Image (cartoon, rainbow, N blue to C red):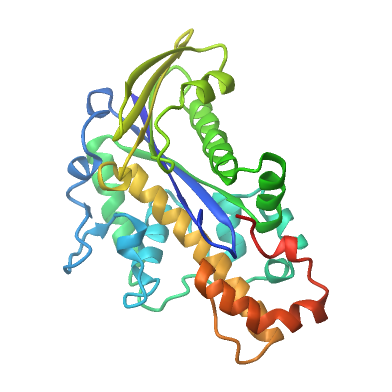
Length: 320
């Protein structure tokens, strides 16, 4: 058997809210490691975001989530896949305990997250999670595929600013989370062939030095470094790991697309908590998604309230 995993982020650009990087990890037969997982799981999964289907749609989160469709398609995919492995969180806190248990203690430092506790699904349009999960389970069992886990690494606003202040580079925050997840995946796949697919981080093409620094005991060879794909092979004792950073990875690898879903879903839940708190402090306040232009509007609207509450702006407003 082999391990195949995907990593993607949500929230790299916004001014408000967290950066979230997630990984989804599957165990599959060795001879299927280079096959499309959409093809392997074609009986239960689809990429068809614009037409009705009984299959579970697994696609880039930007295709699943929009103002017109709302959060339901994103939430459906996230909760169905968790249910397929026996995880059925019913609240924000329970969800965090499943995908990122170390995050909960960090929430206390942020008034907008500290007491956040709401039921999920947020949307009423998610549909029958159990029936769809059963279809996924049957398909996975027939194909010899197992979803081993979903791992989210959110970086909350204050922690994000600490890293940027120290490094003067917000890309350092992102690559740090990616490396943390790669390490977790490698531990999961001891003595198995591991393939990790990462959505390309901006325009960067070369990752050899970063990987060498992180895993100095591994022999590393460059498979490819091009504008579309940067691929590396690492080996140490019985461990073999292939890591690739690819452009538009969410369109080519199901595990990356699914990771993008979990990153976006967790970020949207955090923004739901964020907006709920601030609207309770300032009734009538228009919610924000946290992206730069609207964040500037939001900061003008809340300026006096932030001061009255004594909020540390370095815990609220992300640098760069």
